Image 1: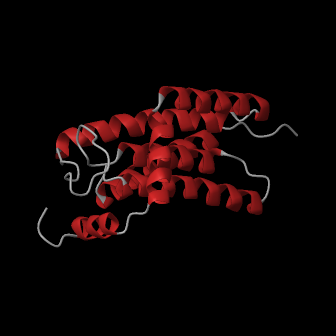
Image 2 (image 1 turned 60 degrees about the vertical axis):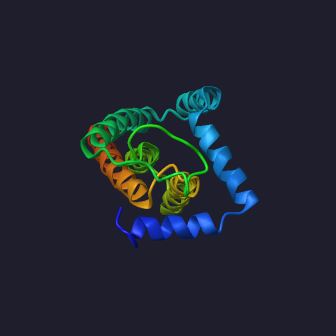
Length: 182
């Protein structure tokens, strides 16, 4: 990074304005997204919701999007080989490459696939779902920056990658839906 880069300016501002409550929140979000037990509980809740609501196509689109986004992010990390933010900005130590953010790609892919593949009953339901999902995606990305696990542009690139993958898979899921019987 060169002196005064966008990433460094944002990270300096974040590091200089951290608060105890925000650090606790960010650590909780990170733990929830990386702990096997928390992921298992979320996975089980998702399976139950999919079965009860019979949202199989959006669920399949989300699952395929998650796999593709994860693999694509891992491949791009190998290509770019970007280092994570240095210790002066980091509250957590995370190994591996930094660009793009895998969590950013995964959350954006899941959200985009669900939003595009689902048949929302009303525009209001679609807006509400979009607001909730986009807020959750943003929360995860902001937490990764706040904790110093990623540079801001890592997260932006992850979001873009995930949104493209999720939108494509959601579109495919909608296109393959059978028309309703007359």
